[in-house]
Image (tube, rainbow, N blue to C red; front, top):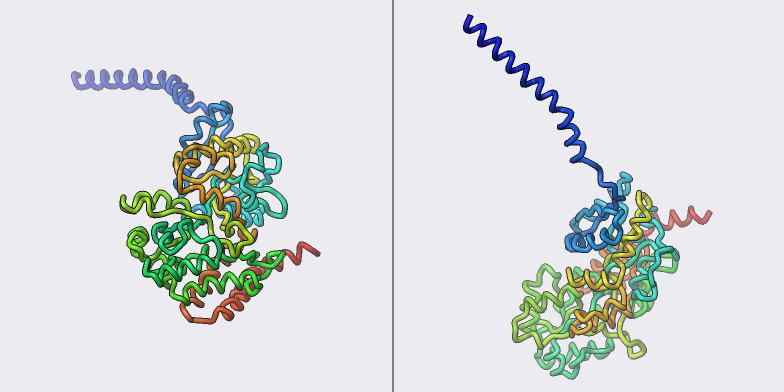
Length: 434
């Protein structure tokens, strides 16, 4: 009897517990529902790449403060995975509203009909460097807005160049060659310049300075045997033939900064990120012995050479769900004040002229060369296949320099290879003209 009584009491406690638990369920459901209340603001999905994707997060709160009905959903993507991820997203119709992309990718995504036009954005186009702006225009239509810029200038040992008569750097190709010859002859440096053979930018900036278009007028065939490119290639080849640059790839350069400091070479064509690297990596007694200058012009008829119009742009995808809000984000990040803020956060150079009046840039002795050069930059051909062509460009240059082929044969094969790469483009254009 006692056991039966204990069993009945236990069952009673269980019933009372279950009853209480079920009574509490509606309250718990209400609390759970309240905790998951949807954010009423309009979401914008924004994909940003690399380091820029990290620092732009600090700028988003100001945009959301100005636009209280909008919420930015930021996704940070490594540069190495960005192109494939964007392509996959486009195929799967899962693109973001806004994205940062390399400006050399714009033509490719336009070809895929992935991007929306941005003609109507209320932005002062005249405030942007023309060559940079042009990278965002395909067939006369605007598909991106420059976010930050990148180009190449000449970094040089001003103490060594001053010793051979060029304290401010060479101004023309003739002076450039003379300067390198003097450096070697007077044993001021082992080589005049470092131009790694697996970097295509060196051939490209020489070709642009010579007036080369790389491709024919409609971008369907190579134009590497035309006089402009041929002359630039001959200058490039001659530097190596005379022993003024080492025949090495960048993987064979043990320590660029140490070798620059010990005068293994006196000049190097490189980009703005190396301003900070030279300051960090060169010894203290070297800090007043290096400088930057715009690229030398082909001859005295031009103030400087022409460099590449690199950097990244902000684009709006055709599949964007909230285009009006997305356009506001692009407009915000393009403001001069925001471009200055972005430079202060990560060191990327502003795409707008007015932003360069900021003291952080105007008072830095190494950035005026970039400011000058940015007025004379040019976009690469606006074809989706350009990056593939650029790879074969340096490969043919390296083959000629290393003696695997002649310069003449290298250019002929470069045209043939490029024509093969552009075969599909010719087919598409032919069909569209019917």
